[in-house]
Image 1 (cartoon, helix red, strand yellow):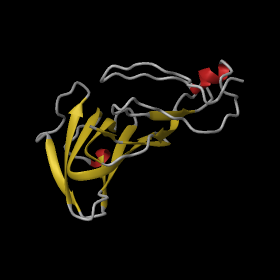
Image 2 (cartoon, rainbow, N blue to C red; image 1 turned 60 degrees about the vertical axis):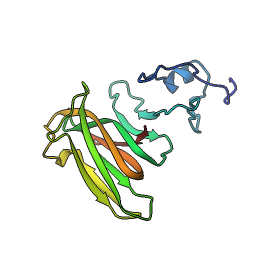
Image 3 (spheres, rainbow, N blue to C red; image 1 turned 135 degrees about the vertical axis):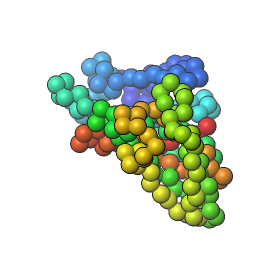
Image 4 (tube, one colour; image 1 turned 30 degrees about the vertical axis):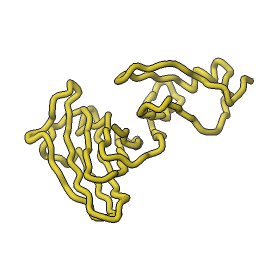
Amino acid sequence: MANNNAPIWAGTLEAGHASGFSLKNNIDDQILSNDSVGSLRVVSNGQPLAAIAPVAKEDPADPSVYGFSAGIGEFGHTVILPRAAKNAGGRSTSYLVMNPNGTTVTVTETFYNEDGTTAKSPPSSSYTLNGNGSDGRNQALDGGLSNGWQGSIVLEATQPIVVIMREVHGGAVGAYNGALR
């Protein structure tokens, strides 16, 4: 068995690019044992990084994802939710935004299509949260988005906020933290 503290993958990513790796492949390569339990650590050299670890079923006939582990959330004035949907192939999202400040915060949400164009008219809307308050926004119930929409959401706030995106796909539910910009 290899050193479990050794990097499984190391490399360089250009801004705006993504990469992935499979822990299953690392089990097959005997880097991890089949009954490994522990944590996954993703480290950046100081640049913002979004990390999502989907948990897939072992049955190749049913490759659906049944959960996500998200990186540690941080407070930020601008938060990006890169994977959002409204009734798109059985997948819908909703997000929870929390105001960790003692005073009211104004949050402006802007929805983008996958091609980068704005998804709604008007493209942005704002709401307020009381100090230490939270609110959920369900894209499946958003009348300004068309059914089948997929894209991203950018939240800009007058004070730092924390955001968690929740995704429902069939009977599977997952979540991830918003990425700071």
